[in-house]
Image (cartoon, rainbow, N blue to C red; front, side):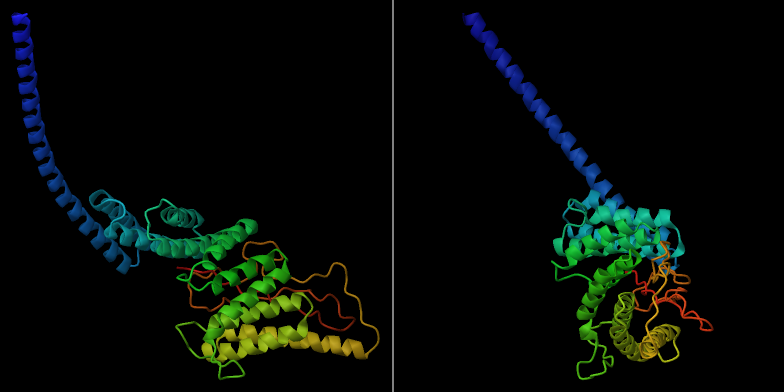
Length: 373
């Protein structure tokens, strides 16, 4: 028994010495690993500075696609150094999401749909729940912008129902958040898509919502709606909203309402864009068309029974033909200046007017106004 107790005591001392040695060695390894980690951090910080410099230089050189690649590299380097939830990573992730939207819409305007989709999906991932953008207010604001731009992307591809779904998601965010970009532009985009789907009554409602949201861009002291640049709003957006609402009234046969809205839109456009600006001329042409249509109706009522329109006659809008452009000569806009692209009217909307009379063009299409971050 004495021999056994001595053996147990020796075994315990051996285990204790081995554990002490192991602890000492592990501590040495941890110190060496710590030294390597510090050295690695210094290298990563140097790479972050290099990525930021490359991003700034390429952006100034007008090479946004290449610049975004370096910005994305900087984001993931910050994630390794600072970890998720850090202020440095948050700022970089927000910048990346914004740049993906800007460059994505530039690619849409240029017709590079593959690059556009890739960039917009990156912004979608960054702003999704669990993405790198953690600040909830900033995340939702950027997410609304992303859905809006995805709506424009799908509209350009001719996928109108997908566009409508994306714009609806954007509106749901904008209606529940205060710190978001102006939702009036989202309503205008909804108006265009719904008009292309020939759903003119809901399209009109969205145009009116945009007008209500933009009312602060008009000087309330002016009964005619003369523009007053207030609160940083772009009053030309109000001219676009009025024009689109007037166009939808024309589709619905409500010509006097259309004339009223076109008249007010022309007044605002003349002050915002200038009397001789091509955009102003588009609105003036729409007003002339509506006025002539009303005169035709009034003349018809005073000279016998009104002629019925042909069954094959139909009004056309910016999307009634089913094409992804919606109307000839109106490319997707990549700016947020509020100006609309020139749009040509469609022919034959009113059918035949009788022998010896010219066929009047149909109502003007809604002005397309894609949104960009």
